[in-house]
Image (cartoon, rainbow over all chains, first blue to last red; front, side):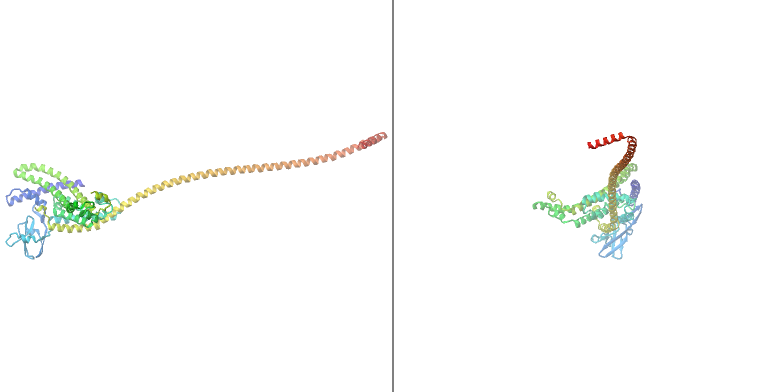
Length: 363
Length: 164
């Protein structure tokens, strides 16, 4: 089944990306006769958007929700006509414009009002937010139905999707949670670890699908990884015991003059750990996407020089993207695992009990 | 750079959604799944333990059977031995009784033989006496018909008396 999924992903990535790029280039050329800008295109694809592109000129407009002191504005992004038009809200008497996929407030004459823009809270359902909803609904549906199977056939061998998921759950339980947190406390954190693992995994995989419902670079978005890392930080903080705080603020068995150096480092480390979690996931996923997209952009860069060169390079580039896809598939699993494992390790450190006092003195 | 700039909106929705999903999944997915997996593991373990116990019980049962068999065999041997002893005692008793009886019979027979013998001897004695009286009478009648013989007899008689 996974093999089919791979093939499916690869075929569709190859096809639709080409279609998208071809279209993009067309429109670029149609609008202004500017040169193909690979950097801008890649960043657009890696970043967030206010509409969900499907194919050609067709994309799904997503709701824009802006909260300001004047009130709440809710309207569809299609009102902007892909950034060509401004939208005036009667309710709040504000005018909005979409520039570089960002909603900004503009003055009556059409110039950007930066002061007003800074006071806006943009809680629009962007492509990434919509992708969160899609994957989350899928996740809930899948796992709640699996849970039902478990409760309906108690003590029976797993079947179907259940048997695909069970080894993963057992792996996370035995090799991640039990190994890092310990037999005594691991049960408390299992729901959290399983949720982040499957959330990251499904979004990594969906990020590889270039068409709807995939196509959003969710786990390669710093906001998402920041939120996930923050949850780990919060959970670590609220479940940490005295022993943990003692280790941070006053490492036992260390002379006080060393503590002056050590304590700031420990405090820094406290924030550095989730920061590293955030950056690792973000960088890995985004890098993979950028590389895959770069290979496709090369086709057009060569194509601009000579159509034959573009065609010739497309063969090489497709082959390379297939390879990248396999790599990305691996990375999708690895990063989900690493994020979960490190979260478990941090949680394990937070609930660790001072059973080896001599050892604590030693380090 | 926009790529590494966190977006408020996305963080907001992500936090809200993630929290909702986390609690939903905790209650409706992970809870039951982990519980059932745990229960199944427990049941498998207990089943394995039960199988182990059953094996041990069977082994014990086998041992018991063997012990019972050995006991039965011992009992049989004992019974056979007893039976043999009883048989021997019965035979010995019977032999002794038979001997005693035969001795009694023999003694009785001897007794009666002795009695019969005595009776026969007594009979014979009386018969002999009678016959000797008759013989003596006949002899006397013949000899005493003459005077000299009478006189000779008297002489011998007198001689006998003197000797006494």
